[in-house]
Length: 366
Image (cartoon, rainbow, N blue to C red):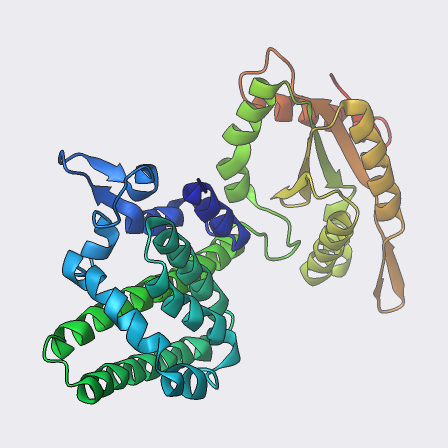
């Protein structure tokens, strides 16, 4: 049996949907079993019948509608004009989805419904890449519904079969079509909202000058990084550094040049650290880097590389060339530390020693 909950989470991760937002999608799969207890639809794969798919009942789809799908399936599959001549020329990027939509009538089982729901979600994410595509989707859905309703009406007229409930069949199809549209739309708009929230969050946690993370970001992750290091015995090193004689630069050339120095330093830091390293502008001319999964001797090598890169910075201001150096204090998270701040205090002391010992250097305090 396919684990659809796992597939759903993989899909959400693929499109960078945040943890809180996944709850909206999971609500699609919440069902109420016969005992009245809430249970996730994905947990009920052992059910022998698909008539208890409450996610469909939520959209007004009844057992009778599900039985009607068999008749609709035969009508559609036997209507060449509808399938081959009209649906095929539809928008290329929707063609596969439309055929999956129709194929569900041919194999209306729990697995088919779960797979189709995931297809709807993925299509919603794909449509989000171009805002105009969602309107193409609605248009395609309307065209498909129109052609299907015409096919049902023509079938009844051709066969003169009074037992066919044209209104019942049409209502069943429209309800299921509406279900598909709702899931796609939910995914589309949730992805837009999630992306916008993430964009705003990223801006709020980035320093505007250096483009490094700010203290807000540090406060968001400090407990997580501390706990992760403790729980899994992962080494964590910290480097606190600041620009040597930064006040002199500001006093000599003005704060505008001071801002240029911060910007250039931030750029050099971002280009010369690993993806696993987390850099912050700690305040003023002071900066912090968390070296995750890193012992102090490894962090020292990374700091020396960064120190040399910073020494090579040259900022032209008129006839003057401004060169930079920084002093660095390096430490690691110790067993007796009960929070990250203890290690940062130790890095600050190491930074103080680097300043007293001549600047433009690294001091380690373990």
